[in-house]
Image (spheres, rainbow over the protein chains, first blue to last red):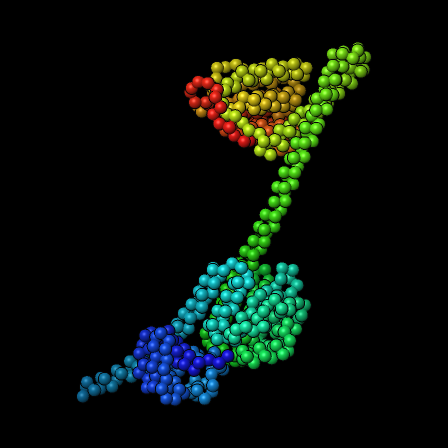
Amino acid sequence: MPVKKEELVLRIVREQELVIGPLAWREAKKVSGLQVGEDGQVKVSGSFKIVLQALVQRYEGLFGPASVDVCREAVKGLLPDVPKEDVPDVLR
Amino acid sequence: MFGWFKRDKTVPQAVDTARELYVRNAELASRNKTFALLQRLDAIALASLGTAEMAHAISELLIKEFNYPFAGIALVDSRRRACRWISISCAVQDQSICDVAHLKKIPLTAGAHPCVIAMKTGRRVTVRQLETLLGGSATKAEQAAFKKTVNVQSCLVFPLLSSSGPMGVLVAGLNRTDRDLTKYEKESFGALANLVTVALEKAQTFSSLVETARNLKAANAKLTKLDAAKTEFLSIASHQLRTPLSIIRGYVTMMQEGAFGKTTERQGEVVVKIRSSTESMIELVNQLLSVSRIESGRTTVEINRMHVVPLCKEVKDFLSLRAKERGLTLTCDTPKMAMVLGDTAKVKEVITNLVENALKYTDKGFVRVKFFDEPQFVRVEVQDSGNGLTKEDIGKLFQKFSRAASSAVNGAAGTGLGLYVCKRLIEAMGGEIWASSAGRGKGSVFAFRLKKAPLGKGTKTMQKKVV
């Protein structure tokens, strides 16, 4: 069943929110090309794959490799339903 | 210089601490998620009572939470012969395969079926081919279309093990292989299967209770109908019997009095036996009539202010001949007593019944009627020096068709209805009735109490009640 790729962004931010709280949203909003709202609205300008990678790296820069694992776990169930070209290698 | 040194050393330390805290928080977050999921499952279990409804809600929850293409639950049937699909939910709506009504049962003898294997081994089973799981239930074309539409890569079959044995399976269809499970999924599965088992067990118990209640209600309605028919039959039959019996008794009495000529001694003995048997039958018919009237709600009591002592004296006068014939002393106290609330005719019927019983079950000695003044009641006791009663006898004496074991001792005839009628009448008049005895051969006391009437004049009916 196809999944909207924006769902990947939301899953990641919501999963990070469970770990670090509202900071997850604030950091996501700092990612270039990404607009996110806590109401579930996501807007990506430019390459989705690059923006998604930047989001993962944003958390990684702050909290290290463990945060990448959290991102991977968050989207694992969605990846089979998303086109491969939209998924950065770091999430595979 | 020193400030720069401090900052340089502190920042990496803070980063390390933050990252360490992150790792711990991530673990806690994962557990929190599992708890939250179980809590939602618990809420489903509390909100729904029907098995199918609950199974459907659980399947839907799994689909939404884990992004599964499909999830289903199959339960072992009550005969424990097969497993039946109760619910299959799909992420893609309107899949014909989700219509559990047309899915075939899985016989428990099908040892190679993944559901049967999971239940027998008590372990999770992974199925790569959907056909293996639903084989026989859907056509190949249906299965191929389903697999393609919903993207099922593998299925996990979890056994649902209750305390009484395997109760079914929970199936999760994955869009990936079972090697790609998340930590959250791995942590949740064990507790999930347990909680689902408890929830479904509760739902099944409720369903079986509902069914039992429905069956009992139907049986009760049938019994009520039968009971009404029986009461009606008793009433009609008794009426039809009483008239000819009364005629027989009349003629027999006339024969005894010599209205049809003198009888020989032998004939006289036979006539006495006929009269005695006829009277027993009339008593039986009268009591059957009383019971049928009471049970069909046709007996009423009119509660008045009344004197109970003169009534007892009347009964004593009426039965003194019978007492004399049996060689017994029948006495009745005549103290001054307060008026009571009761129906004169019904109270007399009760006293007559109690005294007749006492005479019937006493071979020698006495039968006496005594009165006791209590603060709010007048108590009447019929005491005898007869067979006595055991504790077991006393417990069932006032039930319908119940007779004391000791009543068989002197072979006295009885219907087991008299005391039942007495109890119903006395209770309808707001009183109480009971029996006591020191034991077999030590006589017995049958007593009842009625409320004292409020002070006043006249005997106007104060209340009318159906017995």
